Amino acid sequence: GQNIDQPTEMTATEGAIVQINCTYQTSGFNGLFWYQQHAGEAPTFLSYNVLDGLEEKGRFSSFLSRSKGYSYLLLKELQMKDSASYLCAVMDSNYQLIWGAGTKLIIKP
Amino acid sequence: DTAVSQTPKYLVTQMGNDKSIKCEQNLGHDTMYWYKQDSKKFLKIMFSYNNKELIINETVPNRFSPKSPDKAHLNLHINSLELGDSAVYFCASSHEPGHVYNEQFFGPGTRLTVL
Image 1 (tube, helix red, strand yellow):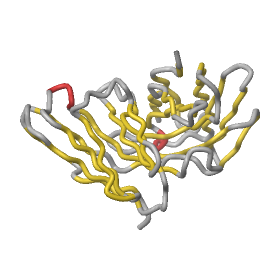
Image 2 (tube, rainbow over the protein chains, first blue to last red):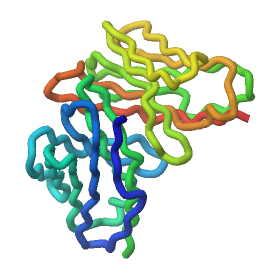
Image 3 (cartoon, rainbow over the protein chains, first blue to last red):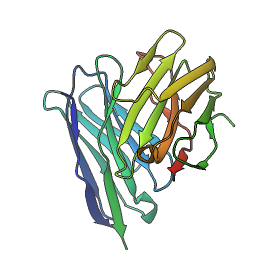
């Protein structure tokens, strides 16, 4: 079966750095996405990785290792507004997105 | 504004009723989706649809049916609503599978409450 695993909840301090991990087992691979979802709102696209390595976009970076079936989202200089759920999703060989359950990130002052 | 829009934002109804949720995108995308997000916040794909193919998640009851009058619209019809249908339903759109820009853009969601 297809499976995406990520921690249910994480807590971090404002101004710090946090890394949210995601491991996956899917039928084929056509890229991995990270989305951010604030409570009561729609998911919004953060990043896309299809090749191994690190993609940096401002305070957010996303890393992929296809051989390990592993990705992480790195958030730097955390701000209170970063409190949200972070969803990992993998596009399988049929170009269908397989979603993780999301990681709820709580930022404390 | 270019976006994915859906109506209504909130829908409260009685068990057994039939209801529809509308979705429109003006992003020029070829593929549209319906997702269900339950109280545990897990996003579950219900349907994906483009002008060539409807892909149905086999776990979705046949009380749910998508209707696409044109490429920019994908409405969701639900018959004989049940308590377990209470959830937030998201519409999304993207370019066709395999496109270099393939992220999905989500509508604001419809919170359905079945009493």
